[in-house]
Length: 404
Image (cartoon, rainbow, N blue to C red; front, side, top):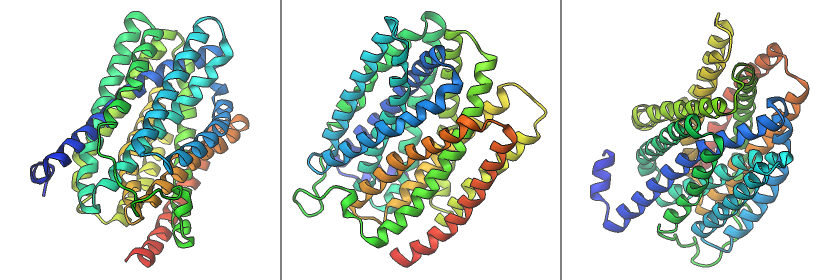
């Protein structure tokens, strides 16, 4: 069965729900390039790229508070309402901090630079957690590539709008446009069907639903997520240093970053539409997950032997890592959550996609403050990728014990 056969065979409410989910995901990825590019430009103007690891460390504090609040809210409210609260809070944070910076308050640029990473993780976590609970594993494998691919179109369009607007009228209008669309996915998501609790009553918080065996399983997934973030953020840091050296003008920086995010989403789109629908249904989950770190290792090897200098090699490596993280790794990780109970899925995503995701970024940020030698950083990435591969093998041994 392909996507169109699945769509035609579904009843009208299910079709309507799927359409709203796709539109919400599209709008999330549409607004993110604008928010990220403009907030990054403001931060670099105020403090420079070398200060970004310090901001990542501060991000852990904000994330810890956010995860605690989101986890508590979801034990009382539907995922749609929690999503709306997160989006409204993000709108207020970006609006107030940008107005403050526009009026000369330089230090406030830390706030949108930190929150841009938290709000996107929250929005995607809540939406994909809902999608994961809506469909069975077989249907989810069929749909995840299509949903992600259409979402990537939003990122492509958002990146193009970022570059187009920045080139013509500057960075602030980019932020104002992005700000409007922060709320759009929340309004769309509110129109989706509210899923009942597993027992029909108010449930425990998602994390409280774990058993000891599930905790072990989620801990390995969390370790893999941490390693992925170590690698991606080292590549991100190297790219930012090369980017800051090469491009110095404010609007040009915003425009360049818009093009980078457009290319990231273009590669993500290709992987989602052309690779995932074929691979998900034909390659074993174990081999699929082993391929990801090995492909990163291959790309890192090419980066190390390239004769070219400047920002382009770092940009290419960064684009592939981010695109595959958004598509191949993200889809594969969602499949790992499938055997879990409904509430356990949200709990696993809280720990891995939100808490561990940001703690890992903070840990590598602490290292990057003091270690900025390329040889050491490349060696670290190589070791992390090899450990990742070993963890995947162990994960699927446990997977067979628990769910087969």
